[in-house]
Structure formats: C-alpha cells, structure tokens
Length: 365
Ligand code: SF4
Image (cartoon, rainbow, N blue to C red; front, side, top):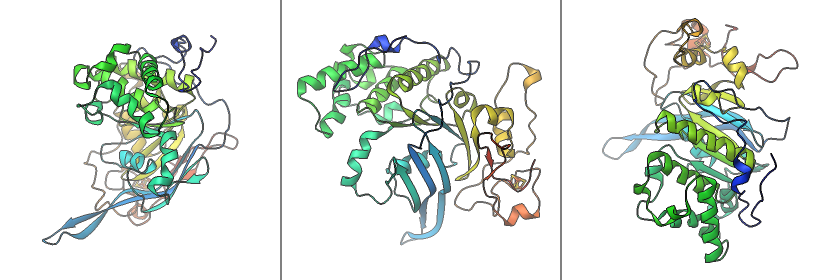
C-alpha cells in the first residue's frame, strides 16, 4: 500500500496511509507478535546507569530519614522505530524511569542521551527543543487532559507553546490530528468529560504526536480501558508507529499486552532491570525467576501451555528498604547465601552471534 500524502507543516499523514492492517490486533492476548526492527541502527535513546532517588522525610522538622531508590542504576537503549516494552509490578519504578527520561523528575545520577545529547544536566530552556522530540502518553487521560479546555484548545496548545503556525493553520492541524486518531473534526468543540475512556485516550495520543516526536513514552496507556477498547488503542499506536516512524517505550504490568507491541522487553524489579532481550526470546526462554513469575501469571486458555508457578508467594518489598544483595532473594526458591550479600549484574547469556539476552542472576538457572 502506498503511503498517503504528508502535510508539509504538521507532517501528519492523511487517512489513506493508515489503512494497512499488517500489525493490527484483534485481541491483545491472541494476536500475532509485532514486526521486529528492520536492522541495526544507532540508538535514539541511551540511558546509562540512571538513578532516581527520593528522600523519605519524617519527624517534626521533616528531615530526611531514608532514601527511596525508585530507579537504581538502570541502563537501556531504544533504536529508531523500535518498541521496548518495560514490565514489572506496580511500584517497581517503571513510571519513575519514564518521568526521569523526559525530565519531569531530575536524576540523582547517570545519563539520558537523546540522539547523542545528554539531557540530564540541561536547563529548562535548553530542554525545550527536546520536549518536541520526546512525548508521553499517560495511563489515565482523564487526569492528564485539562477538563476546562475544549479538545481543540488542548490539541492546539503544543503548537502555541512552540510558536508554530497561524491560528488558521493550527485549526487545520488540530482537525488533521483528530482525523489521524479516528475522531471527527467536531470533537474539537467538545470537552474531555464528554468522551468515553477510549476516546479520551485517543485525544491524549493526538496531543502526544502533535509535534511529530521521535520517541513516545507510553505509561500503561491501555490499563484503564476495557479489553475491546485496549485492542483499538494498541492498533492505533501501531499504525502511528508505522506511519510516523515513532519509537516507543511501552510500560505495562501486563506481559500479554507488551509482547504484542514490543520488539524487545525489559523486566524491572524494585528499581533495577533484571532481564532484557528480544520479545520472542524472553517468552520462549525466560531466565530470571522474576520473569518466570510474571509469565506464570499470564492466563492461557490452553491448560497444556500454562507455565508452572515456581516462585513462592510474597509481597513486593518496599524500595525504601529493599532486601540486600539480589532484591528478589526473599521470594526466590534458588536463593543462596551469595544472593543475600551480592547484587548480581546484568550479563549477556545469548549464544554467539545471537541478539543480546541479558539477565541479572548469579546462576545459570
Ligand atoms: Fe534468585 Fe539469587 Fe538469582 Fe537473585 S541472584 S534471582 S536470589 S538465584
């Protein structure tokens, strides 16, 4: 199918370019896996040893009593056009990582390089051009959209902030944005509360792609939606990725959803990446016990394909005072004395010539 015309100013493609159904999902739990990358490319985003710490205050004078290590020494990268899925239980630091990448939070250490520029030390003014390139989609669009503004105003705002176009041009771009995400032009005159949850997420997506970013951080973008609506939003994100050459960091606690949109998957536990590799490889050969916990929790209608839950139950510890050594050791059936005192580092366990598959465990399980 040929690509549709591209608006020279906003860069948005006409609807004809969005009709291909090669990666569309009917049901997120049964659809085929996402198309992989076309080849090696220099990273768009390079996160190196990133740390985000929060002081935990208490007492009459609210003095710092402890440090919460929400993101602790995380390294990862994302190539142009690639989707990296980031999975872990609630409170493991996924959203904090995303907010640190877009500098909604200031890192305590490490670097975030976007096309080679380290964003971590930049001032607000120096960051402004990069805010066009990196956008975020939030879990609950009801919270992230200003309920007092019309949809038209919400979508026009990025162009106003960056002083782009005349009022007439911005109206045209807003109409095209709405069309791109499957909403009628008349939606511009209505307010967010007049729309369903799925429609509000479409508005949130339209706002995120308004400035033609290269990287979109999707923070649980379908978790608050019904399953049938989840499929529509995932299809929309996949279509937009193809048409606009977007890269995604796709955050979710649901491995079933992540698998179908991701080229690679990173597993996060208590602020650290414990396993990272190609999506198919992680599913076929999960090596870290925590990855196996998550996979065993994914329901499969075929009892023969259900995975054995091999790790004992237990609550996720708090990142304010995490277990020593390997954070998983209180829940891990393979834990030995070494695990209680020594934190494992990520090491590549892939066969020679195969794409990297890194796991943070002292042992070959
Ligand atoms: Fe389990 Fe030890 Fe490996 Fe951690 S390092 S996952 S506690 S075996």
